[in-house]
Length: 301
Image (cartoon, rainbow, N blue to C red; front, side):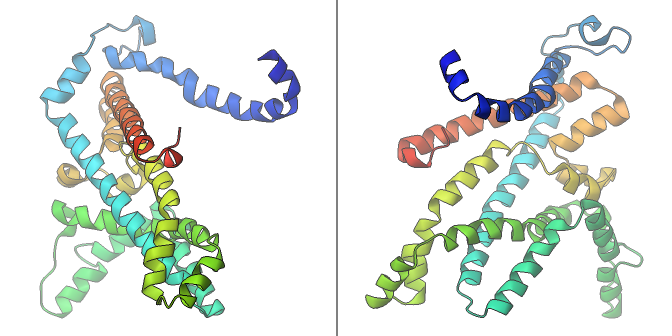
C-alpha cells in the first residue's frame, strides 16, 4: 500500500480534495444515524437523548405512513425511470436521424432548455396554469362553458402532472446522454446494413438499440440506486404545504422535511431517512448482482 501510494502520490494528492469533501459531507454525518433510535431531546443532545430502540420505526409502520411513503416514492421514481429513459431513447434516435443540421441544433436546444429552469419557476408556471380562479386551464374551460376544475384540491390529477413536469424538465438532459452514445456508434455498421438492404427501421432496431444497451443499463443502475430518494424540489415546490394532496404526492423526502420543520421530531425524521437509505442500498446491490449474473460487463462492480 505504501509502495503504491509513493508511486502514485500525485494522483492520490489530486484525489485528496474529493476524499475530504465526502468525508465531511457524507461519512462524518453518519454519526447522526443514532438519532433514529432516540426520542431526541434538545437539552440532552445526541447522546443524552432517551434511547427508544426501534420505536420510531414501529410508529412509522403502525401508522401506515411508511407503506404510503414507500409506495409513493417508489411509484413515482419507477414512472420517472421507465418513461424518462423510454422517451429519451426515442427522442435521441429520432434526433440522430435528422439530417438538417440547423433544425437538429434548434430542436436539441429547445428540448434541453427546460433543464435549466428552476423548480421555483416551475411552480410559478404550474400555478399560473392551474390556478382555480385565473389559471390558463380554467380560463380556457370557462370559455368553452365546461366549468372550472379545482386542480389544487384534486389529488389524483397531480399524480400525472408531477410525472409530466418531471419529464418535460429532464427529458432533454437524458436525451443528450443517449444522443452522445449514438454518436459514438461507428458509421461502418450503418453502411454495412445499407449495403445489405436494411431500411431505417431495421438499422435502428438491430444496430442503434442494441448499442444503447450498455448506456441504458448503467443509467438504470444509477437510477435504481436512488429510487427511494424522491425529487424533493419538484414535489415541494409544486405541492408545498397543501395537505389535501399529501395522500397522492407525499414522499419520504417531503415527510422528513415536514417532520423537522413542523413537529421537530428529529428521531422520526432520521428513522425515515435511514429506512430510505437502507432500502436503496439493498436494491442497488440486488439489481447489480442480477445484472452481473446475466452479463458481467454491464455490472457497476
